Length: 68
Image (cartoon, rainbow, N blue to C red; front, side, top):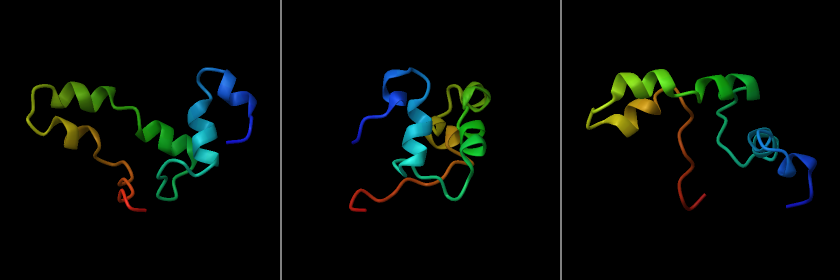
């Protein structure tokens, strides 16, 4: 990976990964993807649920298959 100043500054890695297509975006803008990725409210609502992992990911892009 080429050098980039965002590697050194905490809080900018997500933007760098988005620009380099290292995260699944499903066509969302960076701002929309970041907003959708905030899971605090969903995590509180799903607390204790056996489907916690599934519930906190609702509305997010699906992961790429491991062989992609």
